[in-house]
Length: 142
View (tube, rainbow, N blue to C red):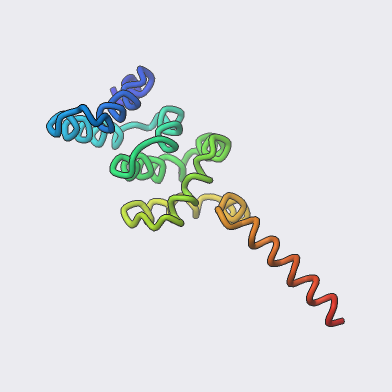
């Protein structure tokens, strides 16, 4: 059932209702509960990927939690996750310090080579530049 809802784009619509300032508190709570319930059963990673990039923080924890369940056992999903910028988004979320999802991010990161995780980290370019500067300093000392 969760996959049928995912394919029908119900997740995105529930997120829209949840974020809409004109939605009542009751409707927002019901949409959040519905999302939580269905997302925790959804294994259709192609439907979860776009949500990862657009969902609000209260919903993100459920999406990232599902990826922590799916990615360790599905190489196709891991490849798609990287290609859809999901791994990059996770590294950005990790830097933001959202404690609700840090444990899930660690589980996911362990399923990728450290070089790929580093590459998609927000400060990767700075680290490379520092290495270049360090190498230049070492050359001057010699």
